[in-house]
Image 1: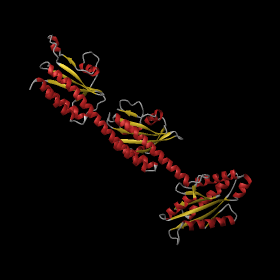
Image 2: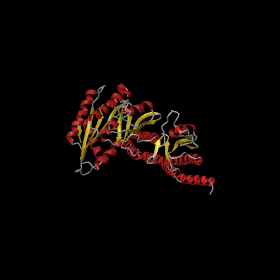
Image 3: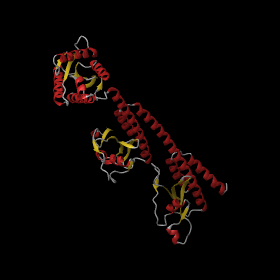
Length: 472
């Protein structure tokens, strides 16, 4: 076999070995192995540009030097093979090449440099030709593997985005959206901690709605605080490689968890910041630029899911709420009382009617009449517990259901409402109240029976002078 055949056979073997690799790490390991096999008399080193990640391959980052003697920098910048000599050879007047640097070139650019240093003898012409062909082949193989990895990553990300979006849209509860999104962010990025904050524009604060750091749940921060504040101002995602070395922004999450790496993104709806997502890890330089980009995409879908949940909640509120008074509608009250009667031991009902309401409308007009209705509704709301249910029963009548309250406790609530209405309304009005109770020991337990008893008690209060309560 002549020299030319041997040369091309070597290149074929090298090309086949390199192109069989489907990962960039595999290509880099194969490059190192093939160099040792074909140039055993020389010391070889592969230098890759800073935007290349590699795990356990014996690769070093390419550091650019402008001293004029660095053949690796020259080969990378000029995109061609560069030869160099050793100090001993130069001193002896020998102009033979004892070192060479060949760029790893693909169609999309230069990815790195192979530097070969021959210690025992100079590089031959065949060695140089082999290195030139090897650099082009290795560069193309590395680029193919990189594109293959990127395409696989893109497919994986698209599947992930589709799955998360589908799951997010299945929930119509805002709290469930926050909790699910937080859990998925930790899983997707293999992160230590995640935190989702919602912007309260009225209070100008960020509220922690979901996090796996228990001490921060429901904590609030000023609108300009920390990374959430930065996201609110810039509307741009953030990546921090090492918080310890670049801690220009104070962060409660980073300090409480001892995290070093961070990716963060604003949650935007109609180009307005409605929240923020923070994802952290204890290791520095943990998150990649691809992680940073993916978080921005996921934050957009989280924003859409939150908006959908908020619209659903607002629609439900409108359906079950009386527009004038802000109290619940009668249908909602009926449904809730029925549900509570199936599991509670007792409960009570107060029906409130504004005395002489027709006279108020005739004297002052319907606009003032509506104002009185709102005043009385506000007093009722302030006199009851969060667990109680106040509704507009019809016209000028209101109804309040009080779960688990005894008759004596209910009387005190009714008297509190009656006395405050008399003192606080303007123009002044009074109310009459009918009270009814039920317990599991009753012969018949139903919504209809309870309301009938309360209505009869209200009739008695009206008939006996008004501005009082009666028990049915």
